[in-house]
Image (cartoon, rainbow, N blue to C red):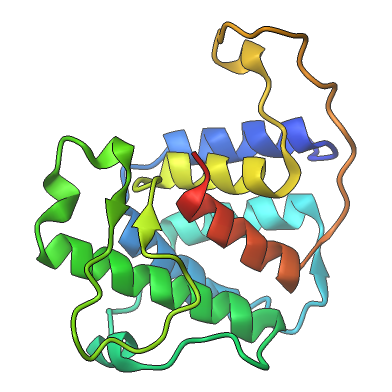
Length: 189
């Protein structure tokens, strides 16, 4: 594996991982959440450790969805660190379950954004109800872009009006950074 030292390195690594799987996003998130407990005591994760963890989560068994999650108060009041990240992931899993149950994930217009239905009895969630990234590849890429940038037009032969920013060095991710990552992964357009 190429060392991950810049935001563009991280973008490319996450893009490759996302492209390597056909695993449904909701299943991946359950596996990522479960494997997160192996890292919960870490104060920070180096970019290479994050990529390794993501690769592990793509292959790890996903624990079953627990229906009671949808009724839990998953708000982040007075919660931080691993617990905040964990709650955001579980809220996202609940949204995806509810969208699948409502038949929304089969919509041809899903790339325009979908709104999770959040039926009556749903507990508070720390995530917005709108989703733009509903597959593992776009979720991971968008998480990187929303957190540290790193997309460069030459990666996708994009037409741009100005020269792209040069890659910038990145450091370790703490749980606050990882929480921003998962929120951005859901909502970045």
